[in-house]
Length: 364
Figure 1 (cartoon, rainbow, N blue to C red):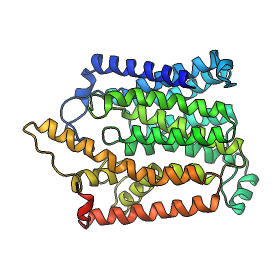
Figure 2 (figure 1 turned 135 degrees about the vertical axis):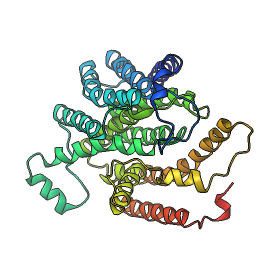
Figure 3 (figure 1 turned 90 degrees about the vertical axis):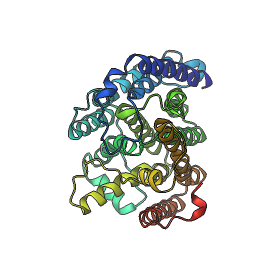
Figure 4 (figure 1 turned 90 degrees about the horizontal axis):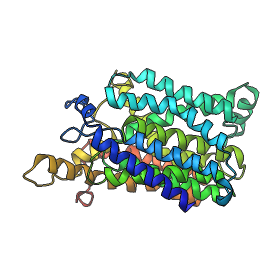
């Protein structure tokens, strides 16, 4: 598998470098007054294209030379999966370049890709950890597939929401990929492990240029690659292996999922559309109220330093869900309790920051 990590890393890093050098013109289209903008200058948002290329080439490489790696992943299967993902990713990349693709169209593309994947790969969420719900799903035709489509089509937008600072969403994706590959290898599923390991290598190739220099961003395209591949891997892992708890992916991904659900709730409570961009996400509050101003004569350097200091707070916060998910991947009750604990911790921390009651030891 190390060879596949090297392939995905090299292809992604080189592709991101090319996009970073040759595609700066479109960055000027990103308005300076956007509420989620926390950088100076015109920075390309095509890192997702490099991640997609790195992952795709590594998948095809595994399909062509699968036997030496003991993967058992036919070339046709890996190519088919790439084709299914492509509409959503290309839609995200188009938005990154033009800023003219409405949210509803991008949501439609991700749901369309999810529907193709579930139909062609026969994916479905048949287990939820609740016998009553599982019984209802079994009685409803296409019920399991519908849940899978919503999960696969929704997670890309959850990753897009947490993609606010250098290295934030990318590092969360790296942690999640490592966790999934670990559990997949525990149950003997090398094909599934390879799927996310290739994404892991491609993400590292992107992060080399993104953190801490902030020379290129993943954009919507990158978030969609992370979200779709990780969601498909989670659905397949639970569907193929009954000893893997259905709450393993829930706890593993609770940070981006709950950030999205909480964001929808607070926007609806204020009478706003859930698709409206704002600057009140958890990571944005940490940037504004916890991370101290970095003193520098250059305003761009000062903003970059604060940007980079924000991400480690969220890495540690995400680890609060990733670590117990890996430790208790087959224990549904413990995973449920940890999920509830994370949600309670998130809400308590959010309210604490909003009310300016941050403990002094949290401020470096």
